[in-house]
Length: 481
Ligand SMILES: [Zn+2]
Image (cartoon, rainbow, N blue to C red; front, side, top):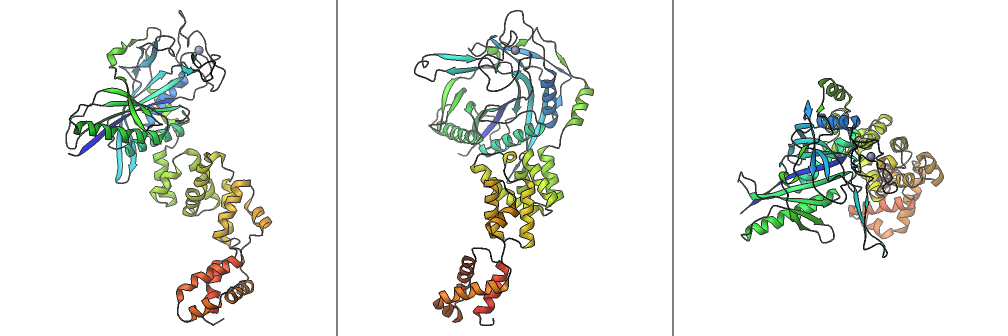
């Protein structure tokens, strides 16, 4: 029997506000433990929370950017459970009346586009962080840091619309790009500012009802999400084929073993005894505010991608990669403004530039090669000052040193040789060094031509103009020169 997976994702995005969601404490990262706390975020009796307007505005932005309806009335509720990192004994979240509902995100797949439903977007507060002793003296202790307690999160719940780990990966990348374009979240999975839980089940292909699902946690990179899903789908299919039942539960992704492990039975909403937080008034969001926020929305990734295809006539694949982050799209446009050959710019960015950045785990805004330098180098190729081959070395050098391409080419003596006399001399030397090959060529073994091109390039240290080398070599070998 053929099975198909059904995947839905819950993402928690940490919102980039200066202060926490219900108090004035700073949201700064990396401070001394428990220095960014107050009676409100540590749940002292008698303290009162007040909602952060900026956090609400960010959630409205996100709701609009994902085509959701912004609820005129939403409500903070208490989600009750005990855990040492939760000082109040409950988390303030939204339940029955979320801030935004019923939107979608469009993802691009090989076979075309697909809409993934956004069921809801709501606001909630983060919990603290447990730290288990890391030195021999402290290994039997656990510590808790409340600095993160009360940091605003947006939870984004998708519909069960994805049918493969790749689709899930695409959805996450698109959602993260939206958050980054809106400048409301850094989207860093490794640092935990963008976290993802996955609900996954399998069912026989063609069946309408969903199978029993498991919830996967603890995946802190896109690759791990895809790998965990792949593993879990295989595991569930194998169980069904053995005649076993899939249990509804929460499973942890074990990075080292590459497997998912049962953590606990999945709790139901009623286990949390949600009820409206009596310390917070309901949120009433006026249409006027929503319209103001709507007007402030930037060009979103999908819009920018369509514009790039239209305006710069580049393939969809290029446009998708270049618009993946706001800085990379800005880099592209700045370079094209200076050197108006979009496809050439795109090729260099997607090839050499992104490869170097990836190798060094750098973001494009930390790239030592500026759009100005790249465009200058491309102009030098176009003018014939340097060959395309030498340009690769110039680029590498620019990346290592941050220098101007002109300076590098001048200092290294990499200017292209267009002097026919000089190229002819190199041809002469190459032919003298390989008389046997010359004879073979003249007997009709024309394939040897490429060998001579290589030799001449070697003689000129790659600086000869390839077009001239071809022309002159042809003439000379055929005895016309
Ligand atoms: Zn506080």
